[in-house]
Amino acid sequence: MSSTKRYDLWRILFAILIVSPIVTKGQNPTVRFSVPGGFYDNSFALELSSKQPGTRIFYTLNGDTPTVASKPYTGPLYLDSCQFSTSNIYRIPNSVDANFFLADDAKKCIVIRAAAFDANDSIVGPVSTNTYIISSLDSGTHGLPVVSIAVDSVSLFDYETGIFVPGSHFDPADPTHTGNYYCKGDEWERCCNVEFYESGNRGINQIAGLRTRGGASRGFQQKGLKLLARQEEYGQKYFYYRFFEDVQLARFKRLSLKPFRCSNWVTTGGQEYICQKIARNLDVDGLAIRQVALFINGEYWGIYSLEETPDEHYLEDHFGVDPDSCNILKYWGVPEHGSSSSMWYLRQWLLGVSLADSANYEYISTMFDISNFIDYWLFEIFACNVDWPANNTMCWQEIDREWRCILYDLDGCFVKENFDGFGNAVDTIGAFPASNANSTLYFRKLLENESFRQAFRARYFELKQDVLSYSRMHGYLQDYADEVAGEIPSQVERFGFPFSVEKFQSDIDFVDRILLNSHSRMEEEINHYLSVSDDVATDFVCFPNPSNGEIHIRFADSNMKPTEIEIYNTLGQKVFATEVMSSGNDFISIHPQLMPGLYLLKIGDQMQRIVKQ
Image 1 (cartoon, rainbow, N blue to C red):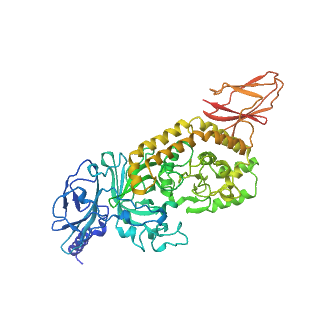
Image 2 (cartoon, rainbow, N blue to C red):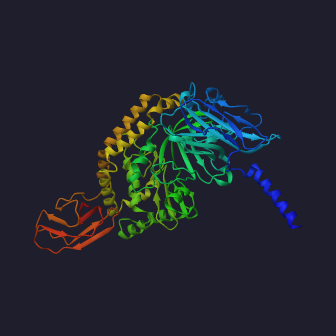
Image 3 (cartoon, helix red, strand yellow):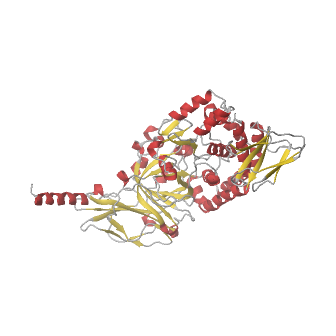
């Protein structure tokens, strides 16, 4: 073949690739909108145009992908209530009868999906989608950002394949765990268009994958949802936007949407939000979170929490961990990603040893990140999570490194008064609904060690002063209530949950009362369950405390002759030790070189907390 013919062949192949819609994912849309999607005060005229001459534009208003059987575009569209979807998908039962609330109506916004078609009625290029939230049409969300999902209705509501309905996978004998919405995996992922808009109409607009997620929330009208970005299927490798002010990340592989109704314990809809905010200053791996309003195919779907998804991509983004070199477990042993073999080895080893032995405790400290472990268990106990530790647990490790815990699904926190949080964490007989001997094993074994018990106790009293102070926790609760208050009436009208604005405020007050009383309960439980020496010794006192370096120790009895003084950090590690010569004086001075923080000074079998400034 001559070089000229080869050149012509390549030109033809190149042209075919350029015009082929198969490879246009991620390229600029063929249909242009004269005004981008987002928030607007009043109605206006919208024009559509095609970059491809000789094509015709067809569009839909109900979220479905346009075809030549859809509405033909013949001129500017005036965006008033005539452009609302008339599908009324809110009337379709998407849960068992006991969980389904039929609203009188649903708030709506305008979703336009448009595509260009050639003379052969073949689609040219990708579908273009824009959502318009117009205040004068009562589409406003009282300051909340909006997530708008547009997806073919058959993907949600088809009996065989719809991911929003009980469908063909529903078993009346097991109504709380069966249904299409409980199905998982790639085959239950559906293609959608997702938009996110906040102040200034900043956000994203792209094709993504959509799945249901969560436990009980799959069976409610407000489904837990997961959004997935993938280059090969959807044209974008990430969601490129800084969604959360708490983290600097501006790209996310996956995002979760947690519904306002994800449990029946309280009707605040904000337990996850409040707990994640409280835990931001703990040594735990938590999730960034914010409140949004969700629309699906132009119909209001209520208040949701948009948050990070705890998976291998989360670890890669936050810790630089190679997704192929990490293990993620649920329920203390079920692999979510990677392998569970190292955790099961550790479990078998623990069953045969005592961690009262310092050598065994030193070994376990190389397997668990003890600081993280203390903060994780302390917070879950303090927050009285009634749906843990047999449920909603997740830990991870970079291969051959220490295990760490991730805080997630915290809807069962701060929902019951007089709940024995510590008893739940050490249960061995299944006395608590979401606890058992398997799930409490690691914590119970660590409590065999005196240094761990002291470190746990000391860490609580340190956090009590600041991170877990009532004033700080109350501030997060009030911030949340203020943020969603304006949207609560719409949530009530759409889902009957909460059943009134007054009920929402009553439950906010109830949670606030639990926060107010949490420290008195926690201290009672620590004194009951932790067999440790008194935190404040009676035979000596350290001063000044806090100290800038030099520490004086005064003894109640001048005849007291300690032989050694030891100082431990909150991980139970000895950081200072010195022998003491008897001098007959009632006080001595030491000069330990300590980093700022909280420590335990030990003389004999007595300990006192000290603080290095």
